[in-house]
Length: 414
Image (cartoon, rainbow, N blue to C red; front, top):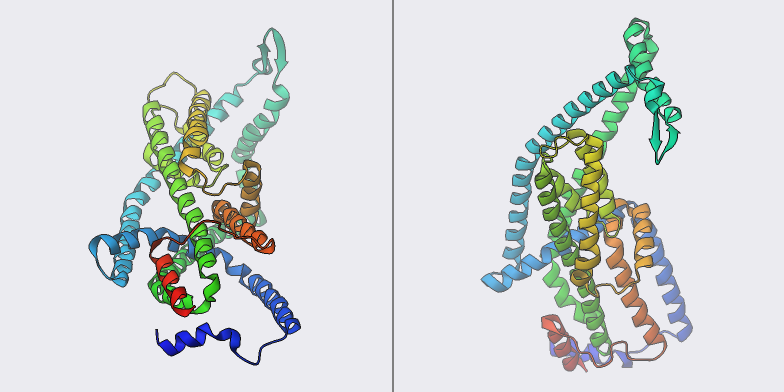
């Protein structure tokens, strides 16, 4: 940097004319209002921005690793990492889509067979079969079974006897409903794919321009605040990095244990189901519970190739029970050691935050809410200590290459 520029930065306090205290306060309030207004404008694309940020955070670590290990320029490392990621995504889809199609076809066939069996059972059902004894007490289940029987058997009989009486308006209604459902599904999938591709491209541009941004940062920060800014940014970065690494490792552990469980219990398509459960488990706190839903459905529809004597309903409960024990052990024993003090937030606040994040941002909001809470906590502690005229980071100094660069810059300009 030019010496004249350093002198200019160092002597900004002597520059005249300066705004009055009242003018600076009005400008600060106006700036806060502008930030709030811009935030409302960005609300429609907040999902895209969140996905861009998440992809940038994920890709930064391997880019830095390649830069340090292979001693290649940063830009080339960015291109290599994104090229490898795109290749892995293409290969994963090439392998995953056929397995998914086969799995869906098998599930459809199983569901059709189970429905036919249910129809046969309900057609020969008698009210005496709905009365069971529990601990010597007679319990009548007919009030619950009769509505199901009337719906399944009655619908089937009406469809077979009155098939010729279907009016043209009913047919148009069925066609319209089916068309709307398919259109909505296709639109949702197309929107998700386009948003993901745009977020991938934006994250590529952000990471490609990151060194330029890092070099420009010192010029935006008053020298007296460089230490505090650097420590605050490093603390926030540590929260996100530790959280993401911990969640990814936990999801991999759960996916591996789920695959092992399903394989030993004789559930088909164990790999696809385990991967899906691992991805859902990335949602903090409630992800493991949500993953039990598809797990129970698949176990109920497909049954077991090992426990062939067990009814499918009993087997589904068995699978869910075993998986629930596994997930509870992982979340209560393994997860705290992996995550450590990544966010240092009480569990009730995390649970409430997950529901708020899911309501505002869907699954992506539920995933990102915990590190966002940790970020708000770090900034809040910093602001409160500054209000109390205390050192926000007593006895701490910036670490790493960025910290060294900013310290050297502060020494030059002060």
